[in-house]
Length: 424
Ligand SMILES: [Mn+2]
Image (cartoon, rainbow, N blue to C red; front, side):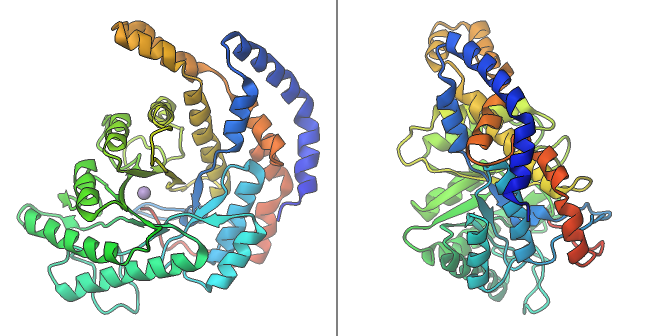
């Protein structure tokens, strides 16, 4: 593990520069009527969940190139999540994936406590077959034409809830790859009815204080049609199931150029926005780290979230869901947590009174400029100060590299093979 003295030594080297940059930004923000310490407080209060599967190297349909010290067990993954949180202080929870992360709940809780972590939403997996299962998901799971296969998939989701209850999770995320590869392969209406019926069975097993997240995705693994392909179907599902059913928006699960911030606004209006999977992509799904391709879109999504933050009942689960193929996953996840936090703080800088005025006056140019003014503000000193005040590293990547953590775990963990993926 990374000892606190490593962080302190790192911070001691960078503290003076941070003070200078922080004072300069404080003065600039003061001229805009903004108290920098309020923003530091907001940054300190921010947290995003790390996906357990993100700590391992991902892959494509072609290959996977694992790095040194890949986590072999969920306890290894939690150690890596602990490092991410220790250095950034902005990743206090972990989202588990069943059955990949099956373990004794006592061990999971002990490891989480050691790293000051908690457990966010549970994720079920009915998009691949497990060695011991009776029925195959080749032609679907919750929407399969065969009742026994659907029952098996429902049962798996109920087991995820059961495991989650033992470790303090309060939500289940359901994503299914069910769909069709050819026109005519399935009856779209009947397939959706079967999906809804299965989801109702899962919903019936949901504890009173839990929520059920429905995650949409436009395509893949089904290449022609997908059962829960967009937010419309996700909303239909959530509305039909009941109050505890919400929609989860994964940034990578849309067609190119889709206005995701508008989807956010509509789901807030419907009281059905439950959570996020953050990532970025140039072409495909959740291929790239948050904020690496289109930071302005990330900002615009956060602009809607900050605008809606006082909406009664709005309680969002923020999670990262991305694949790391050529980077050290710990580094990618730290950068992403920081970029998501950055967009949140930038969005918190939007002068909403001025913006509303420009909107009412139809002053499109000034309304747009108001958003860009917030987006262009370099909030780095705020994020670094928040980490410093919370006991994290001023510059997490530099501190991580100085710590030698990767080399240390590479020596004790078995070398990983090139198999397996893990993109959802
Ligand atoms: Mn996702």
